[in-house]
Each structure stands twice: as C-alpha cells, then as structure tokens.
Amino acid sequence: MEQDRDSRRHVVIVGAGFGGLEAAKALGRARDVRVTVVDRYNHHLFQPLLYQVATAVLNPADISAPIRSVLKARNTQVLLAEAKSVDPRRKVLVIDGGEIPYDSLVVATGATHSYFKHPEWAQVAPGLKTLEDAVRIRERVLTAFEAAERESDPARQREWMTFVIIGAGPTGVELAGALAYMTRHSLPKDFRRIDTRQARVLLLEALPRVLTAYPEELSQDAKRDLEKLHVEVRTGAMVTGIDAEGVTVGEERIPTRTVMWGAGVAASPLVRSLDVPLDRAGRVMVTPQLTVPGHDDVYVIGDVAAATQPNGKPVPGIAPAAMQMGRHVAKTVRDRLVQKPLRPFRYHDKGSFAVIGRGYAVGMLFDKWRMSGRSAWLVWAGVHIAYLIGFRNRLSVMLNWGYTFFTKGGRDMRLITGKVAPRMPALKQGPSVPAVTPRPELPASRPAPVH
Image (tube, rainbow, N blue to C red; front, top):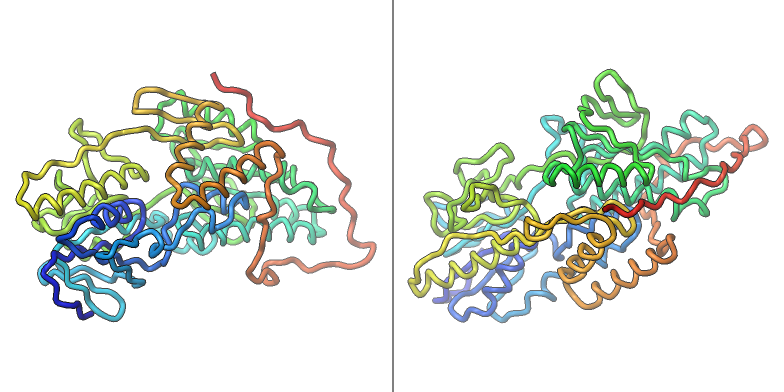
C-alpha cells in the first residue's frame, strides 16, 4: 500500500483492543508522528462483558464502539484490514491486498482460543473472544431450549437442557454463573412444556480448583457461590473428548448438545512471523521496554506479550495491564524522538475481579485487599462502567444492570437470528406428545453474603 510522503515518524498499530487503542489515543496528541491503526473489525470490543452478551443480558452494541468514532485525531488513520505477517528486515506490515511500511510497529493483536491440539473441538465447543462468538453461544443456548420444548423423548430433552462449560477461569466462572441465573430467572415464564429451572449447568476444570489465578480462599468462595446458583462444579475433571452429542471426562460420558470453551488461550499467530523466541502460549518474550529482542522498533503488548515484573512475576493478561502497556509504548516512542532515556515497563496492579452471580463477585484490590460478596460486585461494576467507551454505553449498561438487579428478569435480549431448523428435533403432533407437568417451585437461588 502506498503511503503519502511525510517526514513524521510513522507508527503502525495492529489491533484496536485495550492496548492498541490506548497507544493510539496517547500518540494522537503527538505532532511529530502519524499513526495508522489496522484492525480486521471496525469496532473496539469490551471483552470482559462478552459473557453477558452470550447470556442475553446485554446487546452487542452495549459493549462495543466504532474505532473511527474513538480515534478522531488528525494524525491518525484507521484501516479495516487483516494483518498477515510482519517483515522486520524491510520494516513492513503485510496485510490483505498490500503492505504498510512503518518506522515503529506496535503489535497488539490479542489472544485466540487454544484447544490443546484438538482443533476439531472448535466446531462443537465455541470459545468467547469476539462478538461473533458471543452471539453464536447465545443462539446455541436459546436454540437448545427451543429444541427441548419440541422434544418428546425425555432423555433427549435432558440432553438439550444440559450445558457444559470447560475451563473455570474468569470467563468460565462468569459464563456458568450467568447461564445458571438465566435458566432460573429469565426463562421459566417463556416456555410451556419444559421447566428451564431443571436445566443442568456443569463447569469442568482440569486443575484442583476454580480461578487458580486467585488466592485459594477466594477460589473456595467462588465455588461455594456457584453451587448455590445450582452450577455443578467439577475440579480435577480432564476432558478427553467432545462431539456434537456429548463430552467425555475420563470414563464418564456426559450427554449434551451445548458445550462452551473457556479452558485455554494462545497468542495471535501474527507474532510467529517475527521469527523470535516464543513461550508455550505463543507469546513474545519482550524486553523491559516491551520491544522484540533484536528489533527496537517493534513493540509487542497485551495478550501477545510475555512480560515480567521486576519482582519476577509475569504481567497478567488482563485489560488494565494491556492499557498500561499501550500508554508506556506511546511514551517510549515519543521519548525516542527527543532522545530521552528509556524507562522499563512497570505494571501497577490495581486488582482483578470475577463475577459469580447477580450481586456477588470475588477479587483483589492492589494485590493486597481480598474482597468477596456484594462489596466486590459493586467495585467490579463501577470499574467496568468506568472503562466502557462512550456515555451511551455506560448509561445503557448501568440501566440494564439496575433493571436486572431489582426485577431478577432482565430485558428481552433473547434473539435467535440464524437458521435453527438443522438442529431442531422433529415435532410430533397429536396426543402422542405428552404434556410436561410443571415442576414444583424451586427456592430462590441467591448466594448468601460472603464474609
């Protein structure tokens, strides 16, 4: 791709996630650089709330914003394109349909799903990284209940109403809690032949406990609250097989038609073209300045960077860390222009949280204070609203959460937009279809306060 002649330093940023967007915003105020942001989507996505789109709590538009509406600086250009590779020797980024030369390159392409050498599982166990993933999961979940409503065989009906989530990290825990809440509060009044409160939500984790990145006491709190929400939590459960009709754990077969993946992530494959050492997750082992070893003009940030703190701990792959990296790289680029001494990246841990259910969460503040229960949920909600881009998104999410919290129902986001006929069981007409007797009322599944 031809670039106009310009004496300003050309900074190319690949990826408009948390890190890339922060770098672009910080460089947008610099007069001596021009910025090109390349992304295969035209929107920035607030990934921490994807699970709420997947469980029909929020609309896709509530957690996304057009990149062009965010990056309005005169020195910044946005290109809708897919990055194919990087040629550090020629200093060009190869995209679909051309090349973009750069003076400095910032790779912030994020992570993708890792199925641990079982790529065939991706077709039956979708992960949760994009809006398409969230909508796909939402439609699979809603279609499962629609199929159960049509099903005349009780055994197959139970299969449709069994949901398996693999991986008990933050994504898996949040997805399981939201799905269990949905089946017991949002859906029961929608169906006549099935009782959605009888749905099974299983959370499978190969490691000994859930939320292994958190202290053990918080993991125990999370497990207890998940079980109060009627989530079946199984730790030490190594999945050995997944297909369209079930999940295999050791010798046990779990019949299900809906499986969701949250067990593993891998760095974007773009970094492989840099031809530098990578860690086991495919991330670049960056220098203290977040550059690629041997290429001071190539920066790698966010989920594709394996960065280490001065105390030896790895920088976590969370949004605040990526944002701090983006701002640090922007400052480093400006300091190089005026030949200022370069400072190593230092991560300031402000905390991390995982939501268990309506009004309850676990988390840590500043790597010191451990929180759980409603206070943790309030902190989580405030931080997430603050990080959302745009007043409309913040207001929409705040109103929706408030309505859901007080009504226990939520707004009607339960839309199926794709074709569902191929997955639907045959409908048998006439008296041969037994009517489903409503089950007795279940007690409210509200977690007790965590002390």
